[in-house]
Length: 70
Image 1 (cartoon, rainbow, N blue to C red):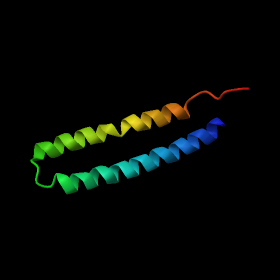
Image 2 (cartoon, rainbow, N blue to C red):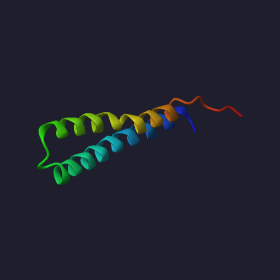
Image 3 (spheres, rainbow, N blue to C red):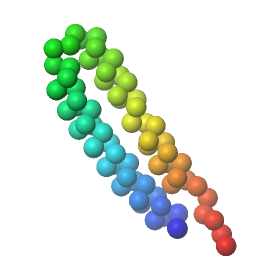
Image 4 (cartoon, rainbow, N blue to C red):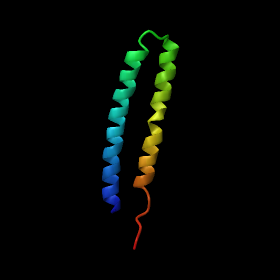
């Protein structure tokens, strides 16, 4: 797969990942953490704010792989 196409696909995947992940994390927080203390909200949003980086790193690593030449 050409590098430019891989980067385009990866960029679209990262944008979709961020949108879906933000919606899921916020929905989960509003449904289950509504009555929790402020420090639980702080910890939750701290960890969920960092957790999306793991799948994004995998996508970026895939995007930056060298092109295999036959």
